[in-house]
Length: 403
Image (cartoon, rainbow, N blue to C red):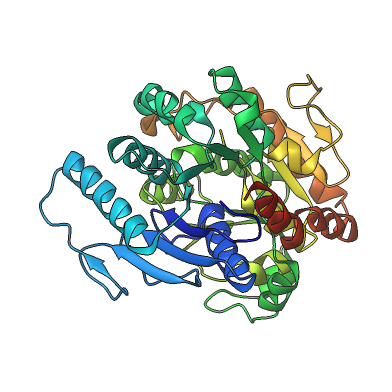
């Protein structure tokens, strides 16, 4: 590649209609690169109304919808879908003389590397790993065999990087680039009035907020079980959970069976969460594992104090940068920006959600929640300042250095 000639880049991500950090990062990167003069192409695998807007030529592989180009997937088995994706990726690269592929998330990374092998692509393939590799399950072994074939691996946190190194990936091949946060945009969005929820609750109560998919990795059942004990002592304590997912019914039943209908509210999917972040008193994060929780950055950007499980990976890097990744600490660990508590157990079964006995981690969470109610931490300015470390300029500069 000649110096001074900017490469043509294909960004691949399974979906742009989800609110995760990967989707936001891919969207932001496409816009920044296009504005900087790069020729950008974007491919998604699933139906896409583009909640997160991109710049450049857009391709979408799906059954129905409006995309610039459409490739139909009907009654195909997963393997056939996988190989069809490789054909499409190879075709886009040839048609547009693409030089470099940026693949976001494991699905896109796996497919891009398979395309590189099957079609002997000369294009450089950079994969972006967004999840703790321990969460891959049965596909872990296959992914670890393919990942070394990437020209470069972007990890979303240093924790993910170290996990990949422990699994045999060369350290020199991996670079950490954190997700960015758009603080000014978030503040603007936070000025929107809250709809379909009584605003007086924020005025007359101490509101804890949790945002995340209602699924096993997010651990909200621990939070709800703990909150029952909190409400017994502090009637003004309220918990709002924003999200949807497969555990919606189970968590709703747990709230009802615990008699928390007037204290815990699951609001479902809300496109603009920032008015809630602005008006809440504390953000609570109970994930069992992560890659890099973007929602903690969003809470920081609104100055909200945070209680977070010290799960692998992300919370420690965001809230306690003074700690090394695997330092042993005494919990609860109070930081400048909030509190880290011991990560929760992973051996949970749906049928045991409402058992009466609480685990040690839940007992610790109860004490920390009550302490916040008694002596609220007022560190909004410091938290907003911490969020500045994850700004767009740092994010874009890191990707340009990689290019």
